[in-house]
Image (cartoon, rainbow, N blue to C red; front, side):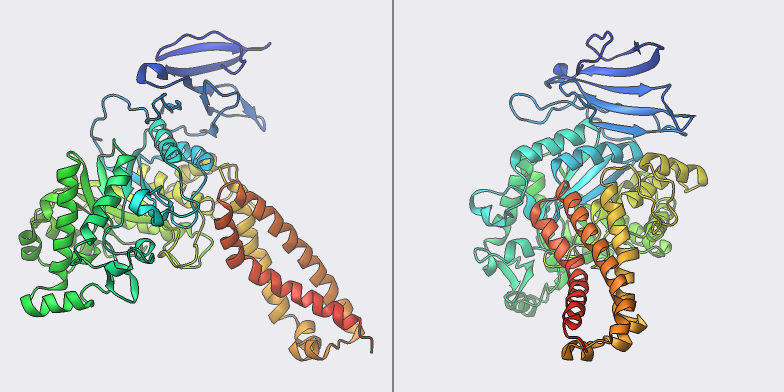
Amino acid sequence: MGGRGGRYKLGAERYERVWGAGGVGISWEQRDMREYGGVGISWEQRDMKARENGEQKEYVEVWDGCADQPLHRMLIMPAPPPPMLFLCCRPSDSGRAVTLPDRAVPASPLVLVHLDLKGAPPKVSYLAEVLPLFSALGATGLLIEYEDTFPYYGELLPLRAPHAYSPQEIREILRLAQSCQLEVIPLVQTFGHMEFVLKHKEFAHLREVEAFPNTLNPHKEQSLPLVQAMIGQVMELHPDARWLHVGSDEVYCLGEGNESKEIMANTQITVEEIFLHHLKSVTSHVASTFPGVRPIAWDDMIRAANEQALTESGVAPLVELMLWDYSPDLDVDNKVATVAKYKQSGFQKIWFASAFKGATGVREQLTSINHHLGNNSQWLKVAGKIPKELLQGIALTGWQRYDHFSVLCELLPVALPSVAVCLQFLKHGEYSDQVMEQVKSFLGMTELENLASKCSGSFPGSKVFSLITQLMCNLRPELNELLGENRYVAGWFSPYHRRINVISPLMVQEIQPATTSLMSRWQTLHDELQNELLQIYPPSAVAEWMEVNVLPWYLQLKKLAEELNAALQNPL
């Protein structure tokens, strides 16, 4: 119990105890995880009398019986969510994730948060903070896309990035998810978006088009065994997974390779049929090798297909389609018609995919809550117009890169207000003032409408959120104004003046104070932000993000300051 006073006993029961003089009432629900193969005791604790700013608050603290500090402390007033027990156990001695009994199929559609780990994989310590928050906000599962951060081995070792998770870290992520009652669905790309595989010389010969590493050539003899090996290694570390997402979106250039062209010319088959044949091969392998695991695939490559082609392909019994659209004004009736077509073609279950980040610009660094709230609102309308039994769940995607070679877009801490709003909207079916206040309480924020304000919050990574907001909303615009619109810089210290190293002494007093002040603020933000990012991400991800989003502007300002000082050394 970490040295805390009071009495307790093992088992899943509820207790009351009193701390210190004056008696602050504590109630908690406690479960001895050893009965499930775990180690240590975990419990949920509610301080019913805590006060903050003269106002009664209610908190939930999640503890691990082997730790001296709470794993997470969450404010849940004024409107507490339904009671939820977080089981924060340690792995068993065997190293396998603890499996709870009775993994019943959920009675209602799953609500998944997508973790896109390519490029900026959060440290496990950060995920330990955010997963309980996801769960409390209404998420019931995770869609985890590892790409090159998965610990591939053997012949697949080249796929493994230097900052990839270890097998032990993967097991810990799964344990954390299970402790928060979050279903985990791994995602393995098996057709399109294969850049992280096909960029390597060992696999470059398997490209559909020799010059482009994005799409797998489905006709090569080694292509399917490669995909099967990737799936096998991922499933090896996800033995309890009930679904496997096999990707298959944006299979660009399919049909443009020499072998595809030859086959289409000789057999009259279409690109669509080539796609369906490969998808069937992959999903058949999953069904035969991992009984009870249902494949999921993105739907965009077959949206234009007619019912006959889909039915005759034999794919429908093997896979559940995930329809994706990230627009805030998506066509509801069109989506309903698409779902009806898939149902008529034999698909028994359908998933939706909305977004909470990574859908508004390849270099975007601030997440638009309104955009993503509008997108999820449209999907909720679609859900209301299709048979209930069809919908298996919805995944809130959070893309970290548009593809393997693009820059990083919004980081996860910056998007937590967005995912909080979207999850609570889906949970309540509306975004009322009461729901908005609930979101603010979860995040420890006083402002959601104007994120350019100095409001930060107390959620995991809130300091990163605050600093990046300052960067994008204050420092960058001020620097752009100084360099491009400031009349003194434009008129008396133009590129011409800098080249000849001359400035009017009278104008120095108009330029130097603003430059010095802004330089100091940029340096402070640079150091603080880099330090905060290193608490969450590996150094390589931090270095990349800083080089793309901070350094170019900072170096422009530094150059201006240096040129100004040089001109001052050349008195008129």
